[in-house]
Image (tube, rainbow, N blue to C red; front, side):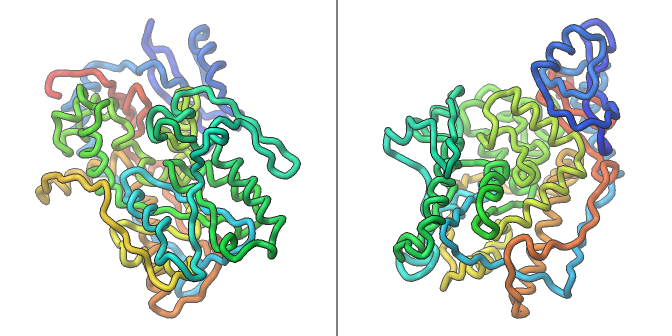
Amino acid sequence: MGHGCFWSWLPLAQGSYLLTWSSLNTSAPLDIDIVHAKARGATESRGRLYFHRPARTRRAAGSFLAFRRLVREQSRRLPQLVVQPEYAGDLPCVPVWRRQPGSVAAFIHVAKSGGTAFRDALLRGPDAGGAAVRLQPQFPSESAVLNATSFAVGRLLWTYSKQNALETGSVGMVPKGELSWELQVPRLLAEAAHRLRRGARQKKEEAATVPCLCTLHFDFSIVQPLLQALPAGHVLGFAILRSPLQRYLSHFHFARQLDWTARLRIRQLSPVQYLYHPAALLDTLMVWQDGMAGTAWLSGLSVHVGAGSTRQESDNARMWAMFRNRTETLQSAVKNYHKLTFVGLLEDLDGSLRLLRTALRWARAPQVQHLNVGGRKSLRHEDVTEIERALRVLTPMDIWLYSYVRADFQARVAALDAGAVYCRAESDVPKVHFPSDDDLGGCIASRGAVQCGAEVFEGRDEKGG
């Protein structure tokens, strides 16, 4: 999966395809409709991803036992992903945000990473008064606004037409009757443009309030238009991440309680068994798939939770881009990570709140409550170790990215203890050695199959699973 490598489907036999790579040196955008036409009428289609038809391989490679054996073998063979950021000085600076007219905020809410409680603390703030920055959620309730499909931003008119259930707020992460993120961004830009024009003439109360996209799940692709449209330093970006192990366990137990998993295999399997069951993994990709713990969110390529695209064709394009070149995806995630003013770690809430307080110049840190916490049985140490090894194979990008963020986070907390020099986000990006595809190794998954090296595993039940 080196640079410039693209997916292709090569026919093995009548009605059977194998997922493989072809080296094509092109940056042409993915066109799913053309792909479908080629896949139906041609003997070979290169340079495009076609996820809708499951791969079929010899029966032994599709079994539960074969998959478990392969994951365990790879977990012993793959190298440890060690991250060592190199800063220009002994310690990095600590990002601090300076409020300016027309500023906006955005919170990237990574699924099952403590985002609900953290968002609540952000919106509540450290106190009710004073000069502290207060975040105001951009979530309209008036029906006239809900039905609007065009917004003026300067001399430009933004228009949008709703086509899917999620976009009208009836399913998924958008409450019924509420407005989805697509219409939030142009409204936010319009308000920012108005505040920029008013400048110093803003009222004191208005100047202390920063409109925030912090109500729905979305990834960096929603923050990017804000960074492109507004002057430097006007976007206040937040995120909080969680270790891939703990995020997986949280999502696993959470998904077992949801209606859509009522008849799926995840309900009958333990956290360890689930990671060795390819059919169960393909039933519920959003619980474990690489990128769910941070990489896809920071690179702007999330698929499963209302984070950008709402149609399967668009989601397939994102999935294709996510795995086309995994080193490039990690580079993008790290670059975007440093554009955010604050990124916390759920495993170090005290350090996170200290960095947050510093970033916003709050007199004290807000209180974070424990929300969406569900009871679950504690795991044996052997099971935790087994899960860690399996995740190294199944989620290598997330393992590396979390290691990077944790190393950078710890360095900035240490700088805070040492009397840090303050700076603006993106002004102190360390050097780091990014892993190659061989370093990452492991598996990738489409909707139809999990591929680990040359082996492809389908979502069919087999004896032993």
